[in-house]
Image (cartoon, rainbow, N blue to C red; front, side):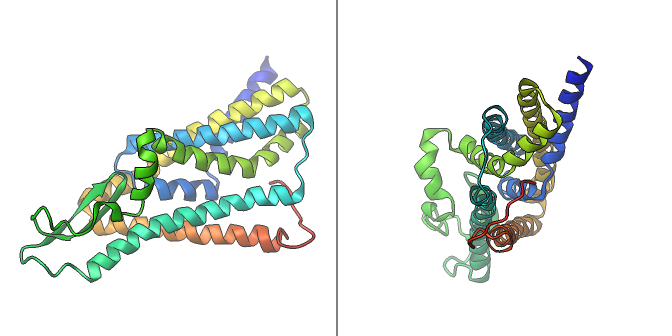
Length: 268
């Protein structure tokens, strides 16, 4: 019983530690930067952790119980998928920031009493000059970066849930082999090893919930008080996501040889 409790405690705290990995934090920051509520940001962290746990549990259990062996090229592809996802998230974030910069540099010329203030379209927040004529809003409602996604998936009612969960699933693919192999070297009983994976996942959920709530504080605080600072934070998060994504793609594709005939992959 003492050994089992030790395994549970170790798995939970290592799971919380795993949530602080740089690629995890960068990914959720790009999403949380568009949130205006700490509670909603914490929920995003929970959903990310659930998706991550699903992959860790499924792939890790297959490795532990059935001896699944992941070829180096497949392993590198799974890890590179994280980089590609970070690039996509960075582009989506920067698209919104670039739109704000364009509208700020080239304000509307029509209307003598136009002014600017931030407002939102779903989870996309920006500002632009406008007047109070209803027909002079400043842009078409469908011109915001994520509006086509909202129109396509929003009516399903699950879009806001699926998005962070899908990102967590991708991250889980990249780390599941390393976690499972670590468990195999320390825990010899398969049922206990699978239990460890589950507790590890729960710890990741808790850790990411705290991280996203903490990340959301400066965004929610600056959104209504310091609009320029808020936009700057969003711009930085997009640039970091884009740069880190390209770094991961380079590491997996060139340094570790995914794009060559002799890939070299060691789960970490």
